[in-house]
Amino acid sequence: MKIGRLATQFQHSMLAFVLVGVCPPGALAQNGHLHETTAQPQQLTSAQSALLKVVRDNTERFKDVSVAEREGYSLLFGCVSGPDSGAMGLHYVNLPLVAAGVVDATRPQIVIYEPMPDGRLQLIGADFLVIASDWDKAHPGQGAPQLMGQLFHYFESPNRFGLPAFYTLHVWAWKENPNGAFVNWHPNVSCQSFAGQ
View 1 (spheres, rainbow, N blue to C red):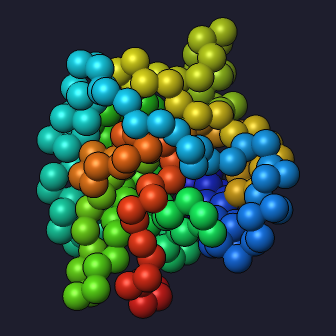
View 2: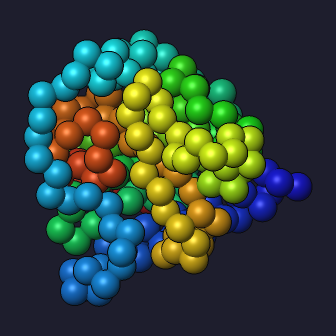
């Protein structure tokens, strides 16, 4: 039942992401929970480099999207792009992992792909997502989760995604992001080659 509710909430959230792509930039500026678009590139710390390596080591098998699908990941609502921010790509979500509420660098709740002109999907990263109320109940007084020292982003509710408050961390493990390895949007990801679900 909880997984079904999460599936509905994720469908609404991904629809909101798609709608962001058609909103004028001024409308986005009114939202206090925008994804970072102007983060400055920085030298990775050893802990950040280690996190990227762990994510790469544990998602390499997902370079073949059929492996991700066999392990319970499924595409929700097409390719996520923004008017100024580049894109996030195709989110393949594992709803049981979301429902579990566990932060584990070896088991991302979401794997992210970019559609390529030849029709293939290229693995570009992972997204770790936990529902805030579940996390906060299990970890009272600890605040936002961290993954190998990298702090998650918090989105309160109500939010444009239609989700309860949640914590999220994108890890651009397979496609270097000039704005940083852990920001939400990737300026060099495109949805142009996405043909639809």
